[in-house]
Image (cartoon, rainbow, N blue to C red; front, top):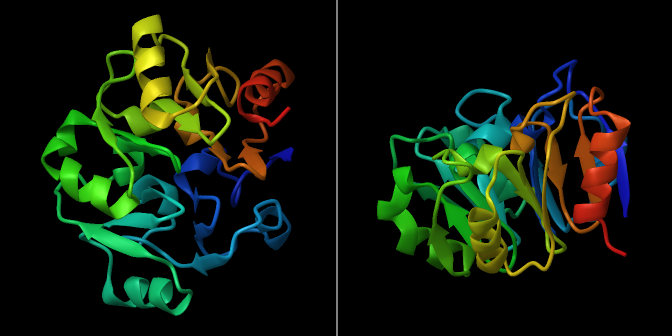
Length: 218
């Protein structure tokens, strides 16, 4: 498992530009092939979502399913279908699903903003779903990043919230941290699977060290 730095087309918010799971990946156009090679996935698609390159902002999921917003176009859905991606449309006006959902293959935590879709999301991802906040923030997806090894959380996350998220995701390790030279919004500057991690070019050595300790396999 390896950590690399990457700014997509000069943008340091790498977490907003890709959705990666242990078996499926969705990238925007012009995502570097050498960076894709970090992630050993069976199925990957290159497409816009909601007519933007902000794939990671508008989608979320795990190896069972990628959740996409109702604003995704027919052409975008066709791209996913052609790549064999398992996906489901979530009919909500809060369409930045990447900001609202934190998931791995063992569980999911969602924002109260989309609580009415809890059962639908649980069925699609085939995991139990918990509704929560992180550090008092409703947009929990942007406040953390998780894989099967652990979860890295917004620096102001309290112990109770951390334990709740750990239990929901079925992981044994959690820590608080920052990315991109001090940003507490972990999900904006980090994407992680069990085989690879990408963070922004501006993420410092100490920040990378905490990512390593929390999300990397021993």
